[in-house]
Length: 500
Image (tube, one colour):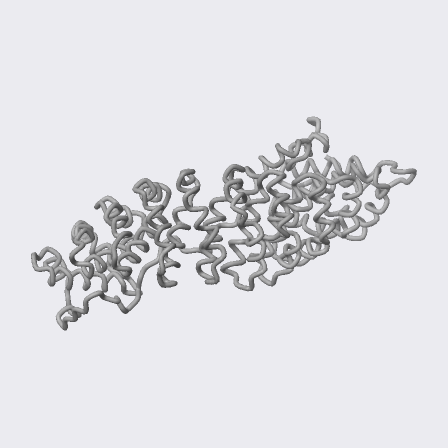
């Protein structure tokens, strides 16, 4: 039989153990963000304008327009008569604005996109520009292939030019179209940025514009912050951050939500990106927004602060100083499991830090709600709670580990050994092995044996010796052989019997 890996050797490979704080922080980025981060599906990448009112600059109503066929539209947009061009473009826009099954494919295959792009450049006809921009907005709200058709027809540059239009409705529709194009991915996002759209968008926020317009600008800015393969260029980020910092003080829920999402994208990954955001002084406001009763604000603000505490020790301390741990206890008890999960994830990141950060988790009494999650939460939340315990245990001082042991985590952890997630089972076994290693120093070994016996932990570990996963079976065998069936502190503990 091959030699089994010693528990202490496994623990060196286990999350952060045997590494200095800096290395633990870097691995936290690689592991937590890549593998355990919730999907950002709360915010729409693209939005279609399905309003029934066009807010035309010039009211041109035609009974014939209501019965336009695709052939009529094709003929009209190719007409030399500006009125016919307008009516045909408006008819196309209305087809594309249908709530259900808009004929995006048919409009594209009819070759209308180049004409719509051409109409964007007709500044003497702002009503035609508006309808063309609206139609392109809705085409760009479709699939990546449909968005690409808009971009390949050369729409980006004239849409950016329309950001300087004196007509607000035209300008706003151009912002919306650019937001849809940017939301498709980093390639088109960077095309928009390289055409100097960011300064123009920022300038618009300083004008006296309607709230709906400011919402569209904020959403478009958030899409320009989005995607990380690659991240948006540093110059664009530095241009947007002061405006995002100002928007974070707004009273409108939609603006606050999209601003927080923008900051969440900008705090993903490297510490330098986090540094750019936290130096804007936004942390106190983000923590304040974590107390919001509105999920559209609470979720992205919590995500952003969670991202920040994946950074350096100093960046995590800034979040703690801003009061995040005062709020985190409430969020661990939140009725929504999605918020519990995000809060537990953020807590796991703090727990992966140095001992003085772990101590703050104790000071703010966060262990009781953590134990409650281990006992009662949905499994996806329990997984985050297990990671928190693992990070806490492997980085804690002896006295902090005693606090963790007495908090009641062992029973719920043992109950989770029957979970279907092999990764989590392996982590729990490593935690138990680690507890045993430290139990002698804590003078808690006998109590640990008794507690394990009470909750059937010995039998659970024993049964895992036959687990199909090699790491799990060997971990269970190591615990049984090392800590049961041998003389411990003068007492003989019966051998559970199973041997390999």
